[in-house]
Amino acid sequence: MEKLRVGVIGCGSIAQYRHLPEYKLNKNVELVAVCDINEERAQATAEKYGAKAYTSYEELLCNGLVDAVSVCTPNYLHAPISIEALNAGVHVLCEKPMATSKQEAEEMIAAAKANGKKLMIAHNQRFVPSHQRARQLIQSGEVGKIYSFRTAFGHGGPEGWSVDGKDSWFFEKEKAFVGAMGDLGVHKTDLLRYVLGEEITEVGSFVETSAKNFADVDDNAVCVLKTESGIIGTLAASWSYVSKEDNSTIIYGEKAILRLEEDPVNSLVVQYANGEVVNYQLGKIQSNDAGGQNTTHVINKFVDSVINNEEVPVTGEEGMRSLEVILAALESNETKQIVRVRER
Image 1 (cartoon, helix red, strand yellow):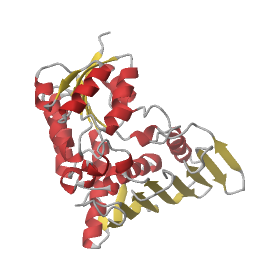
Image 2 (cartoon, one colour; image 1 turned 30 degrees about the vertical axis):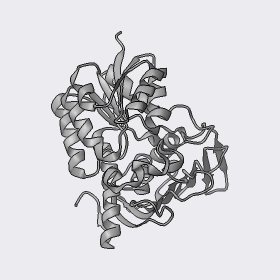
Image 3 (tube, one colour; image 1 turned 30 degrees about the horizontal axis):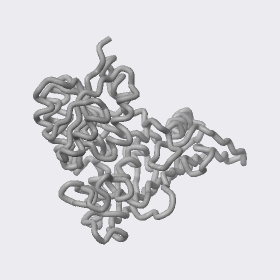
């Protein structure tokens, strides 16, 4: 079987830590091209991975060199680059949040359909073993009716992670469009939708910049969410957690409480109403800390979907629904009103 020829557009941290090494490890992939507007970075990455370097994504896409690309650019470029790639007949794996508006997301989905190409959004939290097990327990009825939840995703901020430190695009509203709420919050809206198996219908939020005085985007957000069946809970997204990362979720049900990624050893703890406790050691969550999983599963799932011509596990529609919750949260913060999702 011929290998899938892949290009990576944007050679920043997410590409360096995730996409490039994971493509390199996939035996069905030939990493043929990398692109970055920083020519030095593009060249260094190309040399490291034995690929061709580009500073123009248009040039990379128009020469027929690649079958698929990862879009690992600042958020404001996700939609335009993805659409151009799809229109060039190239499959796309796009980082999250997939776009900066619902309209952009819809245009991406339409471009994928029109060209018969795959569009997958890199929501890796769906592939974390504890999250998958929790979804199964809820679907099987083991937890009973779900009453409430709380979820958080916080760390010290992208300056400790981004190749550009405090000068990173993450802190520029024009390029990022949203701060911690989009960077981390969208992971958790997608996770909640996946684990609960329900859409989020109403959002109330406070979105602030309190820790990063050099940033013009939010670094702390707390939302109250309500699902279609009436489950209510909170979501916190933060770039101001100065000690270790928090990526935990607690789901409160009729028969049990599920504690996900809260305990450093037991990735899922189930506390039953009768006092019984079951601990699952399912492996560490993918994280930026040493000791996290060395694969997000996202790249392998994307490659498998393209090669086997199957539907991708996180479609553009799924990415858009998770984005819509974030957009509603931003609207809620501005209007000081509860915002209904999907009626906007």
